[in-house]
Length: 345
Ligand code: KG4
Ligand code: ZN
Image (cartoon, rainbow, N blue to C red; front, side, top):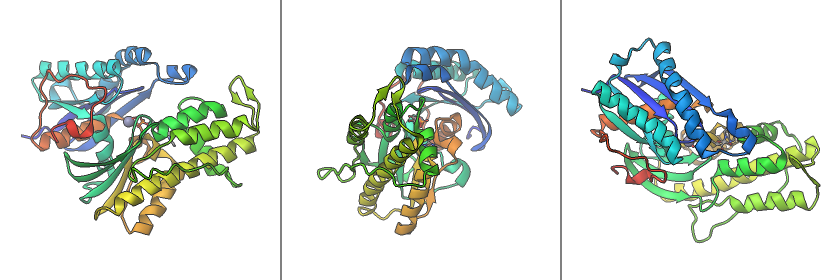
């Protein structure tokens, strides 16, 4: 029988998250972003693991309280096994395996990217198949042809930085905190002037691929040739900073659109589905919407709170996985470099 009540746990990076799903619907969801990494300008793996250990029990007990669910009511436990930081993954996975074993219920190891890929179904219901999926986050930027749950056709990926990683790296030059994607997005949205024109990488040997490290270098050179560098980034007026932020968003939007456009030319997709932390960007959501309209494709993007890492997407992918007849063994290990297509595909 399909489990009704599923607990989902996500600890792959710096969000400690848990959620409860009943019959595939979210009844409780708690996410704590670990703010302690801000002062280091990036996620410190050892500190992330320790913080997950400190925060996870509270997150799980919290969602159970929110939904008035008792431990004995839980019928399956899903957790991210990869990709992500090894120590961080270990905390959530071990917790989930221990709980599932103790309760005698199925344990479901979930691929983090698969969680992002299907997160739009949490609010939109069943997605039309096949769809073209773009997952853009701090760790990944890739496109996938999705023909069903677990039926993926890898299309393109970034060959260097992920889109969110680019935002977080140039954010430091611009004096934003960490992570910087949301701040760059807001600044770009509010800006009405002329954005700085940065070059767009063109990959003639890989039309479905992406590359964002050249843009990072272009931003650095642009700033270095014109402005003085201070303690927290370059010394810029608000106007200049906004023109750079808008220029970065424009360039990223164009490069993502080129990869999506080339992917669309190869197959007849019935929808475009965008997810991952970068999909929370209001600037990019507008662009994706324009792109999808041009192509005559329905567009699905989860609400911002389901774009960034969360427990609901893991519980949901676990639910879909279980319904598809997959259950994970209790000796499933963390896989920091897990590939979307290596998991029972
Ligand atoms: O999916 P996610 O929470 O974690 C990973 O799986 O990596 O994505 C985090 C990334 C960060 O790089 C962050 O800067 C970016 O998503 N991000 C955004 C926005 N919110 C988060 N980027 C652009 N606009 C946003 N509003
Ligand atoms: Zn993620």
